[in-house]
Image 1: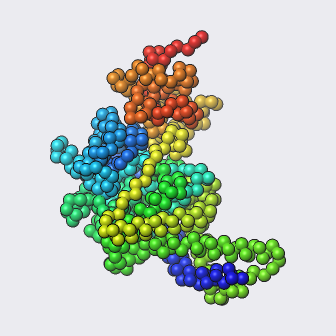
Image 2: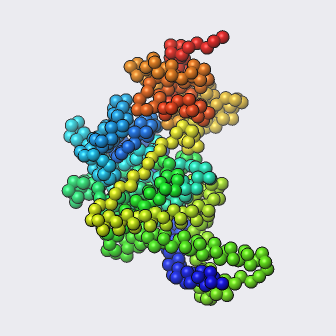
Image 3: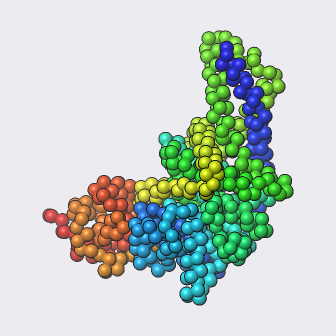
Length: 595
């Protein structure tokens, strides 16, 4: 059959590449299995007692007015660190984002708005350079100095202990990378699930092995802490610019350049605190077009611009990591053809078995080719098992069971992204212009979506040292039916109401405390039907930045968040208050229920 001959011809052509790439992945997997992580995890008391160095968080924005308010309010309410400020960069022609950040800065003194010098969008690196200059202006005005600089995006859920870990490790390292993981998604979300698989494997296996073998550490772009002296060394070599405005992946570029300058780097190993990963969490693209757009930028920046800028110069360890970072230019394009041939051969085999016939394709395969592909199949199975294990560690075995299917889908996505990156790069170079920044549209996890990532209240109370582990275990043993553990601890006088609400605020990622009197608009308090406000214990009190702000004495449930979202066309922002405070406001602003 002519299709059999065509399939064999394709297999002969692909054999060398597939074996070479497979052995490369097998090498990384073997190092991961047989070596141990040498990074010592600091104990909680040491983290809490370590002197807090002054940290600046840089957040570059373009058209992020829908999410930046939620991001700032949530993260400011949960970070267990005191000595930090947030510098948020905006473009002059992005008025909605300017208004959203200005509103956040009005409410939170540690948030600082930095306006760029020209209209956008330009590039993330260019925007970050403005923000850094805004930081320097702040230092000059107030006579202070930030010892550590970190970067984050508008969609990030920062772990409460993230700055503590950056503070701890930046004593000894010039660059500290906190793990980055996608938020959990349903099994049906195959594109976002692909990100979950890849990041779980990358953060669990690839990056730790890279660090153990002495490779340079590419920044993830978020959750990266830089010692200030290291950034000043970068600036001295780039006419004062820390981030390369022409590079689509300024984070990868900085990781390489810091390594080349001899700066020390560390990836903080993935660690679980009460079952929750200590990592920056976010949603990644959830549809094919957005995923291709984002990955095209990664391929263009890391593989193509990296090749153009740095070539293949250096000692063999560096060349090896260049190979690892750039081999997708070939592998991604070949993968769909490999999958097609595999599925064709499998289909022919099953069809022959069904009719009790011999598998004709086997007669056309040379003996050496059959052995070669038997070896590559074994390597592929090992790779799949490792990815399943890494994914299961973070997302559970049920979600990890679909990894093989998502691996096939990943070949399609990565192939399309690589083709797009090559087309974009060739077009830009032929027209002698810079590559365009293909910005990813961001969404921020809602109250509903964030529930699965929450730690338990009892665990937070222990973490905050309001109760001991022994006291929590004793309370759990004596917990009455129908009562929540936080309430039980409060009624048994092990914690105060203030302790409980601080823990609830941290768990839900919503701010705690009464708003200022001038923030409460009496007209806004009536925008929700009284029955709904009473049913879900909420009082709306102001509208700002396209969002309806409401007060509540309890962490809003999934049902409450969904029903309120269905009633109001505005995004809902919750604020937690104690019951006595809520009742006082309810008597003042809510109509009394009809007897």
